[in-house]
Length: 307
Image 1 (cartoon, helix red, strand yellow):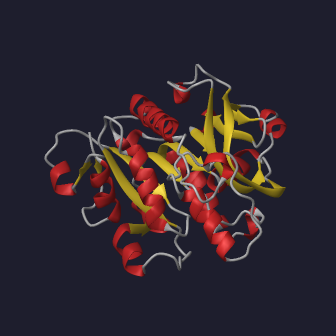
Image 2 (cartoon, rainbow, N blue to C red):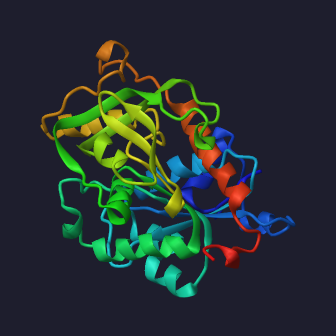
């Protein structure tokens, strides 16, 4: 089944060219089924790139998905055209006031790792979002900084600055092969990492109710399940395109910003050669498993979510 997005959203053409089934609102209205309502709270500056990445993954399941784009109310982006934001995004204040509910919500990362959480301009509103998910969202997926912020809000787990950026593709161990979220996963897998901060294994394990599903000996915990809050937190980037790390590396080189070549990414660590994507299959597995778990657990009546 396809993902339902507006026909004039850039992701519509991108996913169509890639063979992902997409459906306009008019086509969806003719189907006598309830689509899963998935929200994307997009905190990244490159909104369109991030939309494409997540729509690609959640649109590759057998279920009909209705994707809603959400932004922080007062925060403005300089990297995406105002017309795009006005046409496709709703501020969280509006979503909250409407009382509507969602089967799933993805909260993306944000390039603000150097700031303490309370110093983020929209921190108070984001904490409202986290609390709102407990009554209005069946399952929430916090990604990178979004996951770090959410696990901090609910459990007080701190983020710690690294001496140098964790940058590249790192092997991760499957810690819970029986987890429904890791159905089909190998014993280990490669996952892109791009961050200046970390969450520490012992501090997560000291919190009741948190379970580490994927872990790297080099860059620490990656995927954490928080059953009590119906949430997953992933601190790395399975959603990345093949060239996303290359774009970050090329940008820093062009700006004369000190940066290491992303490890285990280019063939023989040679930036002149095309990078290799070795995480795509596990990305589809994880997000497909998440969508399936939502489908198995969410009430047919959206109003019953959170009761």
